[in-house]
Length: 248
Ligand SMILES: NC(=O)c1ccc[n+]([C@@H]2O[C@H](COP(=O)([O-])OP(=O)(O)OC[C@H]3O[C@@H](n4cnc5c(N)ncnc54)[C@H](O)[C@@H]3O)[C@@H](O)[C@H]2O)c1
Image 1 (tube, rainbow, N blue to C red):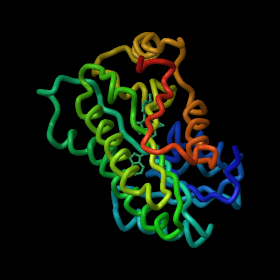
Image 2: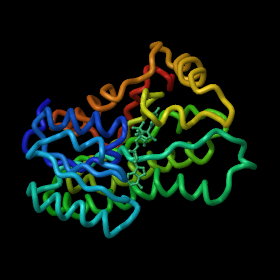
Image 3: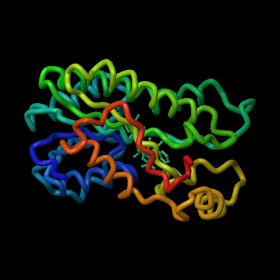
Image 4: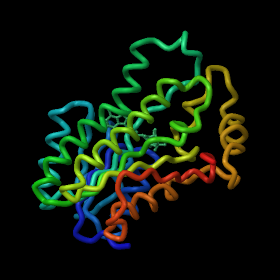
């Protein structure tokens, strides 16, 4: 599985999974266009293969800039990995404000619309491309109190399938990853107010995984690298559960 000569945009690149994706893609020889609200975690990388953009991927002008400058630097946009996202604190629907609902849907679904739209422009001209949207196994195995998050991740998967059929003629593949509970900063943000975070993480989440462990960011990154690679050239519109069996 080699990714030489590929140039891949990674959103959420400063987060747990995004950072693992950036590391693995660089290691596999890809050029990486990494972007996040906060890119401090990317400061340690010194690589000719890496271009870093700090900003809000809900800002359409900024999205256009990331793709244009990435394309100018590396000569193509062969892949897009959407690992940006936000969690929801578990709570009853009556306590969810419209502002919170809208914010979660914007980041977890509308951000994907903006980046996929921009990617499609470049990939159609090239006649190839691979897009991976990170959703969540909770979209099909919900937990109570996460209605906005779960809806946003269902939207991410539906958008993926819609684009897989729309872009297939252009040899652009679009796939979803459904991670299970993964050991990143995000995990504890799902805990309800007053909950014991260690208990939520190491008991409730861990016990929900049949294989018996929380996922590591690298587990997600390996699956993403495979879907980006030419070895996956006949896979599109698929959802890959990388969840230790949580979706069974
Ligand atoms: N951690 C889990 O257990 C888990 C499980 C299933 C799915 N997921 C999904 O996996 C993806 C990665 O999650 P993670 O665990 O690495 O979380 P994380 O919080 O470590 O990383 C998410 C990153 O997205 C960035 N981001 C948020 N809004 C942004 C915006 N508007 N513009 C640019 N960047 C923005 C954040 O700054 C952060 O660095 C998310 O979509 C998440 O919903 C996570």
